Image (cartoon, rainbow, N blue to C red; front, side, top):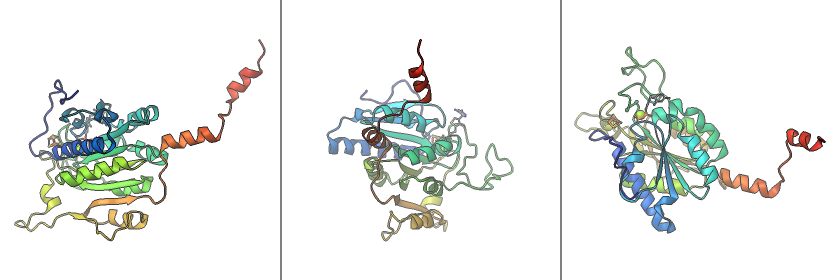
Length: 291
Ligand SMILES: Cc1ncc(C[n+]2csc(CCOP(=O)(O)OP(=O)(O)O)c2C)c(N)n1
Ligand code: SF4
Ligand SMILES: [Mg+2]
């Protein structure tokens, strides 16, 4: 396909942060395509369910392959795809509910496996598609349709979670910084292993955090989003954790694990070179049977 999906009639609300993420992904893919002389069809975008996941249908211009899966299962689908087609560039697009609530159990295994994909997580601190329920990243005490007395669970801090689960490459960005976000996604795709680009992508309908993130001088609001200091060494795990635990929303490359990153499919290829597969006990039993 060379045009966006003509039959999927979905529209983001005016001002939705996901517009910026869409353009950033288009820019990142276009740049990758030129740099590697690689057709755009060498990329597949695997989407979860949510306004964010609908990005897979909204892309304009030359189209990557798109797979729209089930809620919370974008990572296992990406795992299946990448395992069978390691030559493909695989991106996951997901929301805070999709990735960090129903789908959270998949982050750790893929991080330890070092699956060579890039997950772009659009965090709006709410379930947007289903009309405004609390998500793991909704602030404590916020009233939503599922938290009528205010949210009672503490807010999750995704960057700390990613670090703790062993993700090797972590970027924190904002949807309104389209050019920088596009560059960050492109670099994350170049990383040979599991990378996450966590994007603050405000929901203008149910949780409009633009003023909080960017600040508002007239209202005396200090911006919550602050660029990571140029002195920061992304290979310093403890420094990355200290930034992640800070009060502000860091912007930039938070963490890149030191040393060589050997992705899952290369680990398997290397293991096959090194060792012969051992027969299972069932195979041994069958071999010993005389009929
Ligand atoms: C198994 C299952 N449970 C629940 C739903 C309903 N559902 C669809 S999207 C969604 C939440 C989406 O939130 P998020 O991932 O933050 O995406 P957003 O819409 O905010 O971008 C839920 C609960 C579903 N589709 N499937
Ligand atoms: S409901 Fe929120 S997340 Fe969904 S399209 Fe509208 S603004 Fe975007
Ligand atoms: Mg959301």
